[in-house]
Length: 81
Image (cartoon, rainbow, N blue to C red; front, side, top):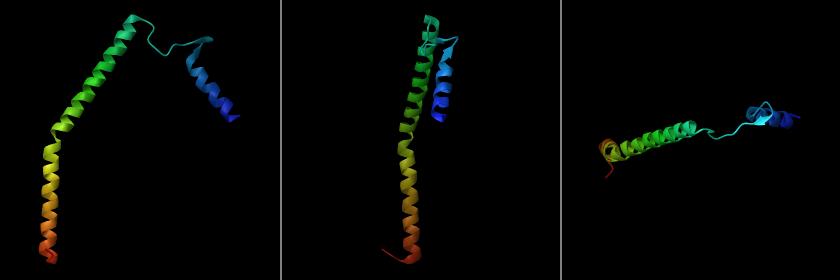
């Protein structure tokens, strides 16, 4: 019973006045808007990847410095070589 109700809810989302609503833009203007939004999202993603890639070196240097500091501190505290 629950599965049937779930299926009816899912199908009712896409059915309006007993016609199937298309899941893609139906006009050239909507298609252009969709493509524009996709390109804008891809550009933002590319900028994020670039910024992340540029910051890898400094992040790795900070991590190495912190690890060296902790190792040296433990060596001083416990006297291990």
